[in-house]
Image (cartoon, rainbow, N blue to C red; front, side, top):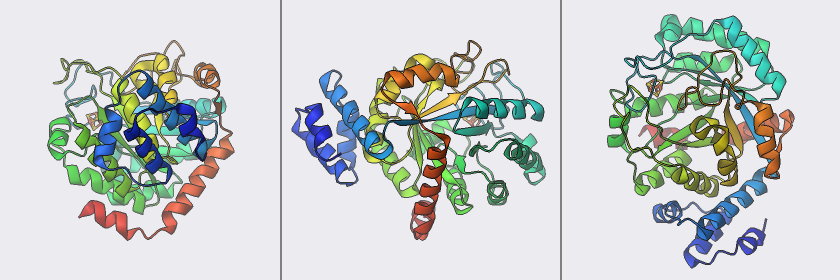
Length: 377
Ligand code: SF4
């Protein structure tokens, strides 16, 4: 990429130029630099930030975009996260456990449509994790047998043995979002849960051979210093996919009347993540603003369209449980014109599989004692 992206985006502010130059040289940004990016004013400075983020994406991924299918197979949860529609006592949440036949149908449909990965998600549902997780393992084995695409598991916090057994079924990714690395904010958001146990599950997942997706929630009272610290923590953790999602108030929850943030801060964070993690995967989730929000997220430097959900299976999203699903707006064919309209293209399946292989080789070649001790200490 050389100097070209900086030349073309015509950044006027010296401070940004120096941040971009440091990122280009692969130097980690410090907290005040992250804070400066997160405070980028609208208008030309923000457009320039997005242009640089896109240039960083292009350098690592060319014009390729990946697509993830989302299968929320159980919406039951034992936890009480204050921000979440699916917290245990919320009567407003759609509750279901999908029969295995439905799950397999959806998995095959998503694979046929060209999804690069299927994300198997559940609340922390003891139905699946009790008895050494035999139901979860059976489900995972059946899906593994039915489709060839890479799989991600998002089961919440599970123990090391179950993580290992799940990884042995041939899954590639474990997704588990801290949402914030500010421990006080964490305890307000994830009521009754332990900050370190959640972190430890991720380290154990990586020890079992998983790549890790980490995630932050935007607009829940975090400061830019919190985000700076979170970026550093995600770097130490060596997450291979880093997600930012704007909080949407959920009916029936303690945060139902929280002032709904707009999505601009999420876009700034996506661009900032791209500068901090140029060669990692960054989602553009359909689960915040539906299909309408896809263009802006890709424009800010994201390179994975997530939360693709086929209609007519009664499946829900997480943040926007129903938006755009039954009218087929969260399908591969609906997102394709948006991707093409930005001069991007859906990557061949093989390209994604090769990326995973390369990431695993890079990751597991390293001396892993560093990240394990860093995060458990
Ligand atoms: S965020 Fe996850 S763990 Fe928390 S209540 Fe919702 S489904 Fe459960």
